[in-house]
Image (cartoon, rainbow, N blue to C red; front, side):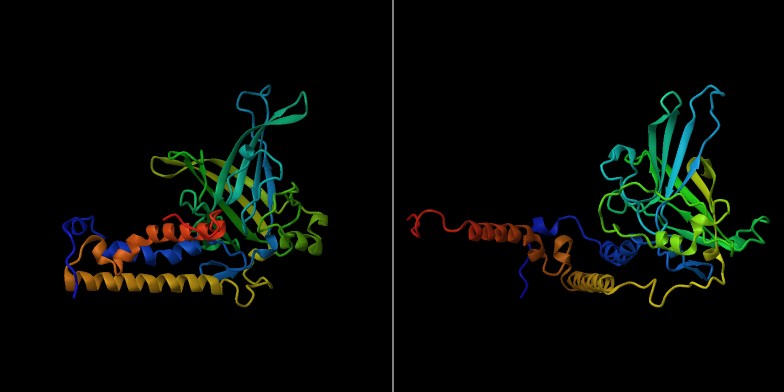
Amino acid sequence: MRLQRSSSSTNSSPVSLSTLSSLFLAFPSLISASGSVDCKDIAANGKHFNLLPLDGPHQVHWLPEPEDGPGALQKNWTFTIDICKKLRWTKGGDKNEECPHGTRICAIEREQVPASNTSTFLQAIPIAGDYLTRNGRTIAPTWSLLRDSGSTADAELEGFRGELHGGKYPFDKKDGQDQLAIIEFICDRERTGLEGDEKDDGDKEEGEDDTEDEGIRRRDEDGGDKAPKGKSLEFFSYKNEELKKGKKTGVLRLKWRTKYACEDASEHTPAGSGRWGFFTWFIIILFLAVAAYLIFGSWLNYNRFGARGWDLLPHGDTIRDIPYILKDWARRVMNTVQGPGSRGGYSAV
């Protein structure tokens, strides 16, 4: 026998079945979005590439022509790139002069002071990265083969292009300008991609990535720093481009020549890479099971009893009582930890 609900409960705001299903079914995509670049297995138009040897922070510089003529102060841009994982802050550095956590590509603009041979910080612009927990923006990479771009200049090139998103400047403002990085990985069988490399040697904060970068180890093994060649990672341009009508985006364009961008590269994705781990699958299966239970239970309550609002959810009363249950549990824990007090076992009557 089912008790009749009061009118106040029945008239509460309705919970849509479609809303419930969309929230829970979208959860796996949110999990995968937080780690959306897998350097071991980058797929572009059916071809797979392994860029793990290029792991680690790398830097390129840009000295634009002074806008106010020869006598103006020189601006200096430094772009730090780590395509495999997020950049770390400099230990003991000023956080206002760093890009936010989650950034993969960061642009720092400074102004040279010739008199003291120093530079003054101007701005830090996050170009690309994952900021899912802060503002929902993700790197959302798109990969495509150069020969499939439709450009005549790229028709004979072997390699692929990556577009990395997520950045915005100012980062914490709603009307901040979107940022985008476009990197062309060009096949060059004579290069490792580390020739002339400028790695970020600053002392970084400890964290989950506080290990020796595999890319740096490969640099020593391949002798990239000793090769008598020009830089493999090259700056092409950074400017505002109107990618969408009426909306400008800050676009950073880079070119990276490496043998790992060749389709017949010897190092392909190791077995089992690119797959989700046990913990990820466990979370996904758990949430799908909960979603199926809630959706089916809500549908059953709607069709059998005409329920609305909270009454749609199975065990709706228990769900609404969770805050009070937790509060009571916390009070009991505190009483257990603090002990019976100084009453010697007697209680007031």
